[in-house]
Image (tube, rainbow, N blue to C red):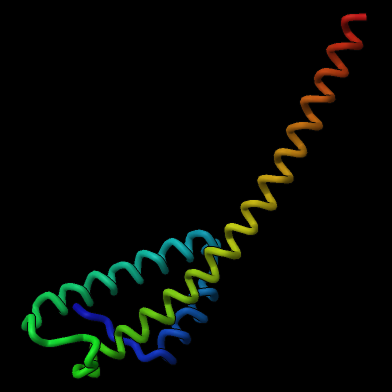
Length: 116
């Protein structure tokens, strides 16, 4: 089954995905990535079933062109989200590294006091 969305519908779906109750941002991101990969697989299957002389670049099939446009929008949104999550991860890593260093220093200080 090939799921086709216009660019506007894709944006609406992505915006509405953030509204799921009880779903964390990471779970939502994972499900969105899985859905995008499935749509990409469906598109590649549809393209492989087309005659070899037909070119997707020519844009002769409006349904496939709409799906490609939708996937491009999804790609951009996921890339932006990946950048945001990477920045968040890096911030958390710095905080945990700093906390780890402080804990190591505190443990060393306590050990030094116990040895005296």
